Image (cartoon, rainbow, N blue to C red):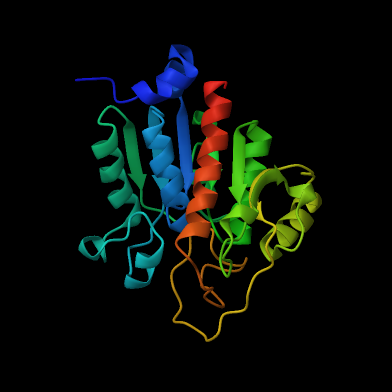
Length: 247
């Protein structure tokens, strides 16, 4: 078989791809943001991917989520994405973990095994738990802030959470992380101010990065586009790949 990573190898050489093949990355939430992040990580040659999500594909996911096809409606997103990863790179050690990560079940996950954690969860309590545990363990983590109710993918940036403005989720995270003694967190966030939805929508299950902070039941469902969550996911993956690959 010809080298499926030859185009990447032309840019970065052999050693970064070896480092990526040895890397272990966890993605929490594989919806609109996380699904595209998983896609790019797999296509970059990351050797081990663990996908945490207990949501299933719904019709309303079809406008933006990598896992969402008419043929996959009703199927677990983590399992759909795991199958897709193997179809992209059969050598990847991918595992679908059917769980919504929460403070109540956080002890079930050994975060110390990972070289990098990608946080695409939408609930503030779960994000805070994940971040504080990674910081305590000195495990690298990058978090997605809100991408719902936004139109402009060019407004997304990678920055420290201390530099974010105008994002309700980032505001909550900044405040609560300070209480926990955490001053810095690498994030992908949008400088675009959110647009209010024109009308309410039916509630969806959580665990993607497209909503405001809250409990596991969404208080309000945001509007969404195909391009903002996708661009956020690609930015997350780009940061992880470049740091782990060393380029």
